[in-house]
Structure formats: structure tokens, C-alpha cells
Image 1 (cartoon, rainbow, N blue to C red):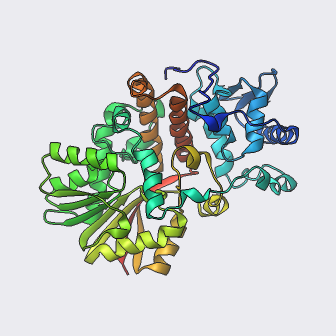
Image 2 (image 1 turned 90 degrees about the vertical axis):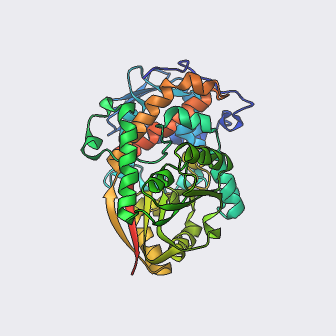
Image 3 (image 1 turned 135 degrees about the horizontal axis):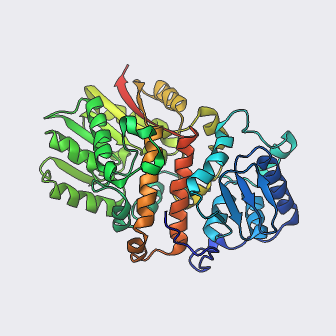
Length: 426
């Protein structure tokens, strides 16, 4: 992958005030350094500090250009400091080291039960000093959900079009046996067919055919709605991102299915009517824990007798969800405000307690998502000159590279999974 950034990046202070170097605190800096030493004892990666000291067991390597700033960020905010240090240019992978390959050993530490609690108990008890809670302004009521979703999905239709496949499908593709192939062979040319495979797998699971009435909750840029309409279904596709809705309508018209698909700028809580299939792809992550019961109740209420729901969701192990659900992470701060990834168990519990729905896991797509993310990141970097022409700066590029690599590492280590769930009435 081409290295687009200067080796020591410096973000624009007026554009990225959150990346201003935090006030130095010797105690917190010392605590961050102690944590690095503990983590690096068994870490199959290498951390090179700018004082020529190195930690770790070898393997993928990172170079810290500004150790003091790096430690200050880690010491101030355990949830965001590492990622913010990358955005600020405090560290980079060593030349020749892929960013996701570097992040995998760190992700493994948090996905492995035996190595997750690396800090001694006395240190774990002090984590609250450097762990922040979710801010109240990211609440996912109707107004808050519109703001949160718009901050990501209305960034720029043109930007998303540069790195997604031509269907503009922004969720895990389905590669089948190819999902576990060497990621170095991942090619943009294979992405469109894999996305169509995923769309078809959802429609097949829901039994969508000619004449079916379909509701697509959180429709994205309408690739699933278009695919359903091409089967002869009647589709209502809803989103709360205005710019996304405009492009979705254009894509529907270009596909020649405007007579079968209605796009509405509408919250899922406000939808009415009955449908033979209710579909929702990777939207639950933006719902928020407080509204999970409302979300699944809305799905149940919209299902006609005998109807089927299919939800594709990013999930994490239940105990990790419980441990992190009240923390404010780098992803929530910079990528998905108000977001929270559920577990399969919590989905089963919520549906059992608040609805009459039964949940079946029909497919795991974790390896497929890792491959999807590698293709997106390669494409994003390759198309960066065109994206930069849209008005985005180098810090934005670093932010999206880190987000895509960080997510890829999560799926490669099973810290994250992606599942397709079939919902039927009990």
C-alpha cells in the first residue's frame, strides 16, 4: 500500500482541536509507560520509542516519533488515546508493515480470555481514571439519531463512491470459501460479486420473491432494495440520512425500478404498515442499548402474519460488550457517534423479553468482513488523490485508514463477528 503521509504528520490545529496535545501529567505518563512495559512483555509486535528504546517480542513494528505526546495521550484517555496518537502523527507502522497486521497482536490481547487482563488488579482498579463515559449528546432519540447518523453517512456521497464497489454496499460482503484466502490477494475486482452474494443471501433467507412486500430499515444507498425489486418485490426503503436518501433515489432510478421502490426519510420508529419481509443490514449498531427493545419491537410490529425478518449485525462477545458498553471509544468519538455493538446473547435476550420473535443465527461473516475491509482500505488509499480533491485533509485520511485497519484487526482476531439473523414469530 502506498504511504501517502509524511513520516511525521501534524494535524491542522483549527480543523482538529481534539488532537491538540494534552497537558503533560507525569503521573499519567508514568502509568502509560508502565502499561506499555506490561503489555509488551508477551506482545508479538515491537514498539520503538524515539529515545531508541524498544519493547515487545518482534514481529510487526511501530515507530513512535513523539514519545512524550504519545504517552500523554494514552495516559489521558485509555479509550481513544492510541488512535488519536495515530491521527496526530505521534506514531506510524514501520515502513513495509501493514497497519492492520500491526494492530492484530494488540486486538488479540483483548479477544483472548487468558491474556485480556494483562494489568495487575491494582492497576485495573484505576482504569476509571483514564476511561471516559459516553457523552449525553449522543443519545439515540429521534433527533439524536438523525444527528449521529448524518455525521457519518452524510460525510460525502462522492467520498463513499470512491472506495465502495459500484453497488455502494457498505456492509460485509459474502465471499464464501474465498473469505479465508490470503488477504494480500484481496482484490477490488472480486468485491461487487461478493456484495451481490450477500444481498441475495439475505433475500433468500427472508423468502423474498415476486410480489413480496419488503421493508428495508436503514437502507443505505439502496443496493438491497434494488436487488429485491429486481426479483419483483415491492420495497419501502427508509433512512434518516438526507444526502444518502437523495443518492439512493438516483441509484433506484438508474436501475429502472423506481416503480417498485419507495425511499422515505423516516425513523424506524415511525414506520407503519405490514410487510412480508423486514430487512435491516448493519443498522442495529447505531440504535443504542436503550433502544434495542424498541428496534426489535418495531420489526415485529411491521411483520405480516408468516413474515420473516433478517438482520445482519456486527457483534462482539457478550462479556466484552458488558465491559465496554458504558465507555467512550475512539470509534464512537471519531467514526460512529452514539454507536454500540451488541452481542448475540443480548439480541436473544432482548427479543425473548420484549417481543415474540425467535432468533436463528444463519451465517457468520467475520472472515468475510476482514476481507471486505482490506479491499475498502486498499481502494481508499489508491483513490486518496480524488478523495482529497473533495476537500478532505491528510488527518482525515489517517483517521479512515486507522478505522478500516482497526476494524479489520477486530474481525481477524474474533474480537468482532458479523452475523445474519433470521427472525420469526414464536
